[in-house]
Image 1 (cartoon, rainbow, N blue to C red):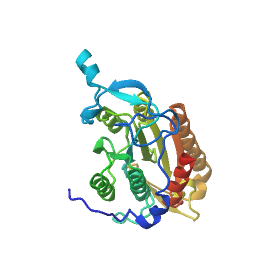
Image 2 (spheres, rainbow, N blue to C red):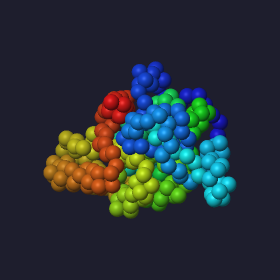
Image 3 (cartoon, rainbow, N blue to C red):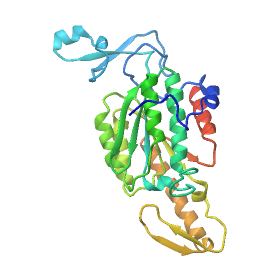
Image 4 (cartoon, one colour):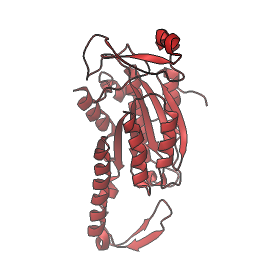
Length: 303
């Protein structure tokens, strides 16, 4: 796939005001190598604190050769105060993410488009902080997985994939998340953008638990469209399921109260699952500016 320097979702001028803010973690995360950025959580002056197993693809200069000669096993040294950040942006591309689109061919205004702007913005900010970013595209399976990297060519490649995303019929996320877990060697941050309108909710959070057990920081951005938060006014509408659920003709007034109850319950269940697993959960309405979401997230993390 050819690499381009820009996509329609990358607004460099608007993002420039955010480049002074670093994407930081709430907890210590062991990066692929030590020595670039100070951790917010731990002080010290580059003190050795532990070993971990060498992951294929890491810089061989990080190996502790004395340990290797003595034991025959490959380990790298971890330090207390300096680490880089590895962040994988995971995007749900199930059909429900198409909700809000202007038409079948124009996805402007959809939850997926919002995720594309948001993911592109995060990839830019993370790379500007000299950290590394990866990408996972999720449906019933792991459609695409790009390991974390920090070069401009790598980031441009990720942004081009994000630009070309299309929705896919799917009601499950767990299989894709499990495959991503199996492919990911180094600890880092997993940021999942989804509406969580899935059939395998318990299995999905069981997969997220795998990342948490490996001491990943997991951030869940729960995307909702304003027309999902409150039914439209009017005498009669046709409601059509995007995942093949069929059609219903009715007045919004007839189902408004029950819909509001079930939607609130859906939000509560996702939040409860997320907090139980120790995730950073954020409910994000696509009525907001993606720049506002980015800014508030970064300011909170930087502060």
